[in-house]
Structure formats: C-alpha cells, structure tokens
Amino acid sequence: MANASTRRKKVPAAPLPFEKPIFELEAQLRQLEEQLAPSPATKDAIRNLRLEITRKKRDVFENLDPWQTVLVARHPERPQTLDYLELVFDEFVELHGDRAYRDDRAMLSGFGRLGDEKVMFVGQHKGRDIQERTEHNYGMAHPEGYRKAMLRMEMAARFGLPIVCFIDTPGAYPGVGAEERGQAWLIAESLREMAGLNTPIVCVVIGEGGSGGALGIGIGDHIAVLQFSYYSVISPEGCAGILWKGAEHKDKAARALRFTSKDLLELGVIDEVIPEPLGGAHRDHRAMATTLKGALVAAIKELRQIPREELVDRRYEKFRRMGVFLEA
Image 1 (cartoon, rainbow, N blue to C red):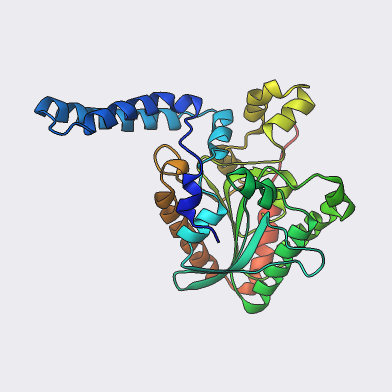
Image 2: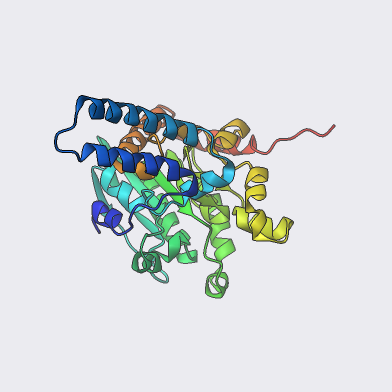
C-alpha cells in the first residue's frame, strides 16, 4: 500500500476560487516569517496576519453554498480512503477478490483495528494522479466490487465484527460491461443484504456520495457525513443536464438537491456531521483523521450496547422513517 504522505505530495496546492484570498494572505505571512531578524513591528504584523487568516477561513467556510461544497468534496488534495486507512486505523490487512470475476480496486476491503476494536472495513477509493485513478477507476465500482463488499460484510456478521464503510464515489461504473454483469442487480442485492446483517454497521461519506454507487454500501445503523462532503441521488451536473438541459446550471441543481451535511441532518437522512479542520479536510489530513477516528470509536461503542438481535429491526425502522411527506 502506498504511503499516504507520498500520495499527498503528488498534487501541488490548488486553491479553489473562494480560497484565493486565504492563499494571498498566507503568501504574505510566509514572506514576513522568512525574515531572519524581524523587528517588533514585523512580529506584530505576523500575529495580526495569523488572526486575519483564521478569521478569513472561518468566514469563507462557514458560508459555502452547495456548489462550493461540492468543489471542496472533490478537492484533489482531500484525504481519501487509502489516506485514512493509514492515519485512522491502527492496523489494516486487505482482502482481495469477489470469488467470481476479479478484484475490483475501486472497492477496498479488509480487517482493521481501531484501538481495541477489530472491524471489517469496506470503502471506495478514487485516487489522485492518472495512474492511481486508472487503477481504482475513479472510485466507480463494477458489479464485482459490490459482490466483494457483500462477501466481506457477510464474513463480519458471522464473526460478530462491526462493519465500517467509507463512501467516496461519483457513482457506480455505468459502462456496458458493468451493466452486462448485473450492476443494478448487485447494488439492489447489496442493499438487501446490508439491511439484514445482525452486526453494527457505521457508514461515513468522506467525499462524494453519488447515487446508487454510494448507497450500495450505505445501509447502516449510524450514517455520518464529513462537514464538506455531499450525499445525493445524482451529481449536480447530471441533475442540471436532466432538468435544465445543461451542465452550466449545476449550481442551481446543487441548491435544489439539498445534499449538504446540514441539509441531510435536518432531513433525517444522516445521524451525524463530523466537523472538518478549519479550511477543510484537505488543509490538515492528520487533524481530520483524528476527529474521524474518535467519531468511529464512539459510534461503534454505542452500537455495541444494542443487542445484536435488535439491530436489524432498528435499522429497518430507521430507513422506513426517511422520505415521509404530508399532502395538503
């Protein structure tokens, strides 16, 4: 497995449009800090500039619109599944293959350890550079990826291991080959199987949560979303193309879909919003990993208190409550 810090170095800092004022202030700060013998006035300027940068980050990231949230969720330096496997888990042993067709690298699985807790991990990985993205198919799993995930989850249920799922995909792979091998059927089967597993399941959207590709490993007892991630039935570009006949309306579609962490919590689709470091997870991988690990440990500890025979009924009722509406 490639080293997390090595992967981070492959992509240089790329400020998003609304991040540029922050980067400009940080450039000024670096110039002042590089002075060999700063005067008292320079030290005061450095102190004030640091406060201004913190204030600017807070102002910008507390007021992101839905489309800007999508840009943060897709940031090339945002930590991905392989990063978290190294930074969050104390140990991880990868398990390969679906016993039928091939090993789908878009879907990763294996045994993990979180402190004293042994877990089964399943998650999607998109990759950063072209080589890594090609290997992992941009996080878009084929049918064999979902078959692979189901095999691991069934194994976890047999041994009483909690399941941790990391969701980060624009959607399941829509190619002809995937459809010929039963893409829709495998996702539906995955939903059914996850709904009936009598072991704790914690699902976290760490970046993009797109369509059935995300939902295919998203049926859990505790659903969490990182603060600047999104979880949606369709991408904003896809929605804009269908409803407004053009991807240029993606910002309008993003507002209409109500897929930000705040919206999802208000709608009862998720159970927790996991806060990101000031300026987004791409700014501080280790701080994000520490927060994520704490959230996972707490969620698993809470679910461990529920008798296994009650988990399935609680999970069923949880998803039955979603999507309720009233007609006048």
